[in-house]
Length: 263
Image (cartoon, rainbow, N blue to C red):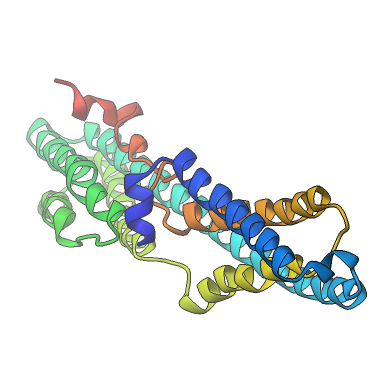
């Protein structure tokens, strides 16, 4: 469900649905409860409700902060993985320039096929949360095959050959890490705590009575807006390859790799 929302709606639309929807439901619930129980406006239970709100709010705030920081760290790590993989591919292409023409051409062709497979085949699959390991396996194996069958003939070639092999192993490692991150999502227990906590905390604000309806609506709407925005962050950060704030394949199309995309 989260993937479908992220891939079919803009961040602004999701903000309107999440934040606006939370505020609207909270205000409507508060007004309806106040009309059903007019005595709430007198605030006779405010002491007890205030203590409960403070306790629940503190616990829920800690949970949301933990979830958001964890998801932000995950997104940052994913960006680093993607940038590192693309950098290693670019460095292999530069190292291969020291090899004879046939070998350099074979490495270039395999690397070009690899970056195209990553961007055009794997990326759409990762956006949908179902990455395919086989999409780039053949292209990467081709690079391994070329380097494994080539024997450096000079000391200069040996230096660049060793660098290229080491970086190719790093690419394979980063590729696996990237695909693993594409399958990551917030554990169900934390999802329940994050979204279920809102269902507990927001209704509690309805019980905090104030004589003026406008003041109570402002109070309830403020709490609901804060919670709704926090839930929006949880939603958009949960999947690092889906939505407008997702990691992009730009590193595979820039710098030394841009020549693989020339018409």
